[in-house]
Length: 74
Image 1 (spheres, rainbow, N blue to C red):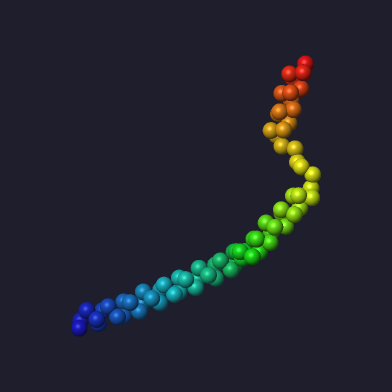
Image 2: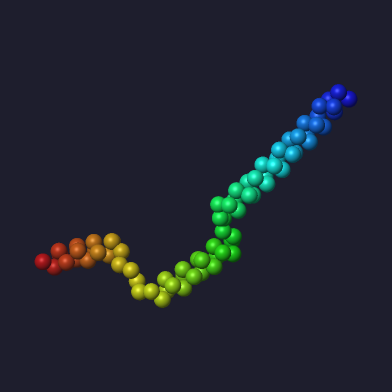
């Protein structure tokens, strides 16, 4: 009986702390501006569309390869 006298309030207090911490975390995520999965997916799809319509970009590796080929010709 004495164990229940201490166990029940301890469980209630720990549960309250858990709920408080979970709600604070949720509020912090909203303030920081976490994007939803749908928004991230739309952004990725928009990037795919624009990357297909834009001309291919020249990378540093392409420039180095062209320089090596140019040196070999000389």
